[in-house]
Length: 503
Image (cartoon, rainbow, N blue to C red; front, side, top):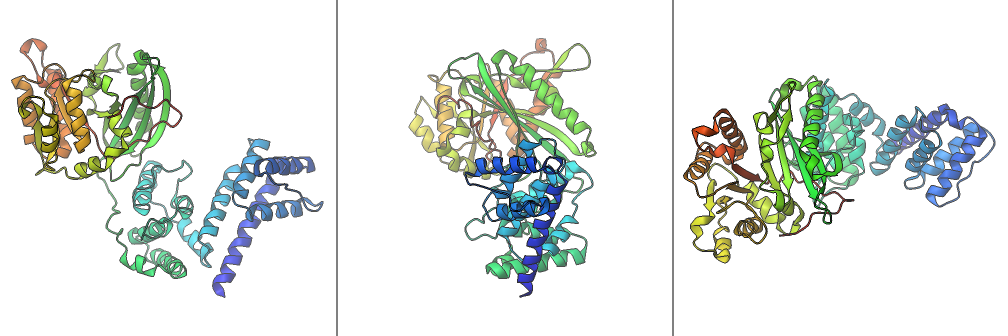
């Protein structure tokens, strides 16, 4: 009975707060404004909505109760109000209350108001940059990596809880919102607050008959605070060529912090001419550096890794030497400041091969570091090569020649690597048969674990930039690495033309 009273109390409180906010809206103080609002709402929902009575408070109360009984009613109400008066200051609060109503209906508990008070009091960091990063990690654990990105409004633990409350659980898993609450209770220094969160979560577990999943809690070792560990930021570019006009591309980019899973935030898509690619990349990097530079956590950013997902026809482009502007009237290569790797646009679009790709990526370790030299295969026996690449200790392929068109040997060798899930492909942009290239590849793999290979490649390129070309060939000038991280998988541009040519 107590639980029912708590549910009723939370329901009345939410409806009352929504009505109070609507009464404060300037555009709804007149009868004409309220009439226009319900007219818009009727159009959106395809159902007649009307105002009951003649007194403004009763009209708005009836309208809110009607919207609360209809799926999507409150969200439609806010959308119509935004159209009626885009500058209404109460919009953000109404959005949050609408999200809370949806979450409350998904997790109806007599402890709702106590749980809400506890979650609102939690702050993970005084720095918004750190807070957002920790929220992404919590969301990743709570959803088992199924939360691709967070809406911009998820700025706190409470707002993340509301976002996750409407997410379904995976097979045999606890509801993401309940996992979030348990993770928070495990990391809080305030014992009383942690106990309150656990008590509320246990009541939910009893209600949904999932107490065994809470006791098992297989996620508890997955969420850890980083403390003062440095952050590596990954800026992922994707170049999608126009299938009709070869002079045009769509350049998309994502921002992702180091850590398990993909938390990439899509930051923009620009339809540009191919000749403008270098300038647009420099502009995006400049904006990111300026953005990170003004955050209090700037000193924690140890590196910005730049990744380019390119179609095969561009894969041999020396993107690491694209110009980066400087205060002087000169430019420097990207490789001076950033580890730069390329990725395969074809692989990111060929879902048939994602399973083996992810399996092989997870197999990368110091022990599983043997590269496969395709030129030692003998002849051009692609079937034999496919058999060889089934060896799970092989995580990388060294091409026998630089990439060219799709009739060449390099494309067929790369296709066999994609088929086997090999995440790393290495070649020399000019000549894959030279001794200095062979020695450089051998040294890259001999100097440490494979996961740190991009860092060693970055050092090799900086070494090359310090030397004069007259001193002789240096592998760092032409050595290329395709580094396909299966954990960072940007989604394709839904409204674009899509990549051309599959595997």
